[in-house]
Amino acid sequence: MNITVFASSSDKLSPVFYSEAEQVGHYLAKNNHKVIFGASNIGIMGALARGAKQFGGALDGVINKKLLAETSVFPELSDLVVCDDLLERKKILINKADGFLVLPGGIGT
Image (cartoon, rainbow, N blue to C red; front, side):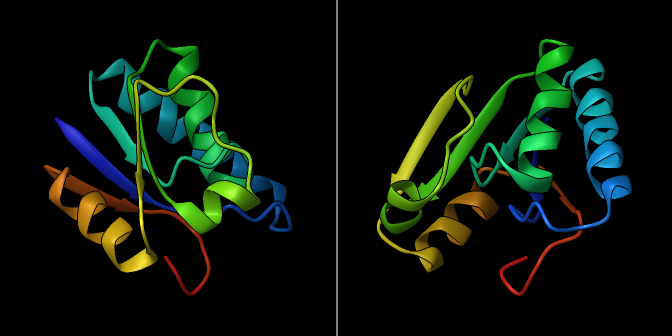
């Protein structure tokens, strides 16, 4: 099952959010769910991705061109989709999903 996870790329939140996101990544990977997310290597997205990878999870990232130029992409993605803008990014994240999780984040989440 493909699970799209919406989450923050901020590294300014309480540390508990990052450790919990990592645990969510563990759970998804151990239960053979592919994680679809915003592709970032930082913040809650990065913690989620690291947690999933620790248990061999598959990760698909979706990022728009502007953010690709501004942020660090998680280096161990199964697939990376680069799109034109945030609206297209959200559409792709939604269309790839069989289910959704929303972790702490900002207005984009």
